[in-house]
Length: 458
Image 1 (cartoon, helix red, strand yellow):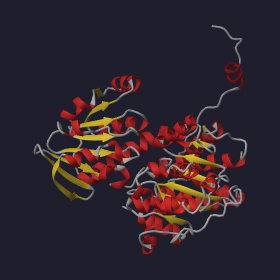
Image 2: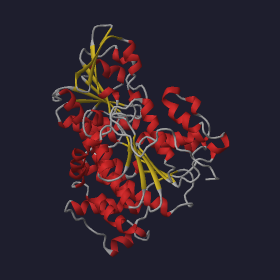
Image 3: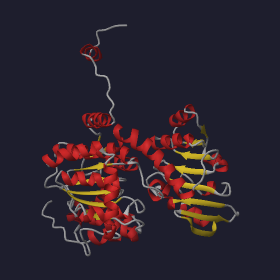
Image 4: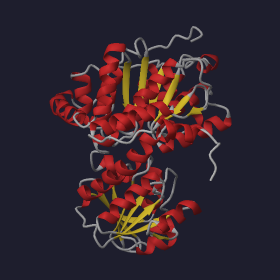
């Protein structure tokens, strides 16, 4: 690391969690999830013997849930010295965080409902861990490294960035350039993060290789589609107890997450409307049998609005002003900026928090009421428990094996966004099928020869 000595930041400890007394409840939740994660368990069993991550420090910025806890246990079994922080202020399960610290000896800095300054304090703790490998769900760790290395922290809200500023300020500009020279690589878990990382690559500022775990078929085909579909509606129903049948549900975005949400909403009997900016995805939604229209039009007739785009201000001031009285709005994309909450507050004359748990009422100047679920953050984690363990089994097994691949190829991967190797995906899928008691056909020698040749004509 070019002889850069990283001082311990004031107040940095091995963990910063809500309540260690919650550990027993959290352990039960972790072990319950583990029963439905056989692929990850298989990886963990091998890693306990082989220790592919021995001697490596890891920092992970992920949703601190029971499923993530089993990934953390796997990384620890592989020999990694792990520090886990939250990737979203509302996604932490405090009992799980307590159990990871108390029962599994893993450093965790995550508190459900933490304020932005605490969130960035925890990001700082992850950086102060001096990681060789990072894991991200939204690219916040990699972004923080980039901002510090290039001395770009002045571009951001001073209050949010204060912990990073305080820590980075202990180094000279030259030292900051070399703080993260020992990073072997990073794993990125979500669509939003991959978008940000590809932008970094395009601008030539990415400093180390990143594996786009989100782009793996064993991740987005299942996690994004089936996991987001089920858990998003779970969050809406838990928070509101609303009947979806017969309602007009507007799904903004028809990527893999939007496909899953639309599919599950239709299964509940909802009349689903899709809004899109991509003509190809809009055409796909139409041929899948959904109504497709601009948000300007959908805003006037929708009952429940769900954003799943990874972009900002999908629902804006002009949309709030034409919504029905009692319209419900939520987000299942990564960041809360998908909904323009600033504009909503500016149009509000009466605000009532907690009309139900995780539901806020905004009475507008025009007299209509709009309800925001989960504070505009990930509704499936703010108001429910996130994706089911079975689907996260594949995502996190892919995540773990991509980490092993990155370590084995240290120094041979260029500083850009890389795909997950195909053999990793084939292993995860085959192991999952086996755990489900499903067998499939195998190619015959003649079929292999036919597919690899060109001699056969019509």
